[in-house]
Amino acid sequence: MGGERDPAAERVDVDGFTLLSKLRDGPMGKVYEAEQRSLARRVALKILSSDGLQKRPWVQALRREGELLARFSHPNIVTVFERGTWEGRPYFVMEYLEGETLADRLAGGPMSPVALAALSLPILSAVAACHERGIVHGDLKPENVFLASIDTGIVPKLIDFGIAFDAGIAKGPEVSAGTPEYMAPEVLRGEPAGAGSDQYAMGVVLYEMATGHLPRLHEDDPERLRLIAKHGLVPPRHHVPNLDETLEEVIERALHPERSARFRDMREMMRALLPVAGPRERAEYKAQLDAADRNDDDDGLDSEESGSIPTLDARMVDGALDSIRPSAAKPPAPATAQTGFSWAVPLALVIGVAVGFGLGVLLS
Image 1: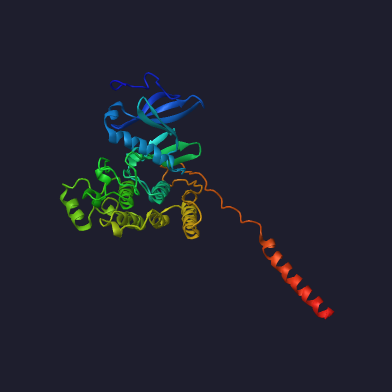
Image 2 (image 1 turned 45 degrees about the vertical axis):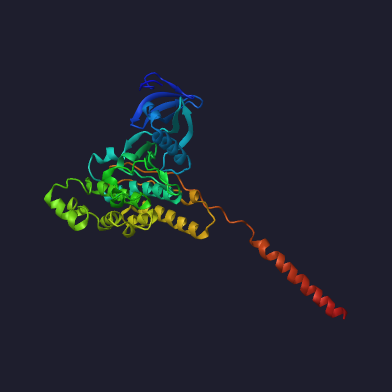
């Protein structure tokens, strides 16, 4: 294609998908609302920009994004239906989401601890699922959390894996390291991103949800400079004096400047956040985490099942959100009905031996 044009304005057909309107516009890729004609359904289609054809790292990054997303079947990670190439430009097709980003929601101010936990626990679960498969998101921030509106309420979805990578494969030097405000100190120093830096980014997101501020902005303010020098960041209580103590501890540990001092993994971070959640979320996510730990011990279940999410239907006390309802987890497989058979055969053998022995005595 010569020059950049608006395919949606021309209702361009991309391998059976008719582009209808532009949803997101980035330098590397553009996301369109589209109609899948074969199924008469709305979808979202992300395709490399025409300028990106001249930039090999962009081509590779968009292909990799589609490949990584296709690995997941998680209620809080956007679903990819298919991938392809059109006029030399890689694309992939996702579920169409209606709603707003977490960044849009935070424009209205900070959230109550209960609402914060109800929104963040599903996203932490999604990030945990990524890490358990060796995937580092690399750009966790409110703009990449979508609050999808469905009939039963709101489902948080992790989106935009544009710079995600498989930690088991060497990360290309031309791949961006993320958004500076959400980058961990070690990444800012030039060290590789990893699960620990994803955790730090989620700590920044929780800080922003709780206070309405970023922990490291406005560093020209003498008072904040003093606080940063003492604590490494502006303590959350500087903004919200009556902030829940447990929530503050979770945030500050996730934001510790030393990677080794943060939570062991995202599951541990979720457990630490449970006391902040409402009763229903606390019970259901505790059950999910306990099941995941048992699966680890059994060493026989795949990670997809251990990363599933129980049904969640919580009313937000501050009215900020109506409800959050991730998909239900798969029920545990019933135990095989073999109890009677397991002892019946050996018992029959014992009886047979005993009868034979008795007959032998009588006949001797």
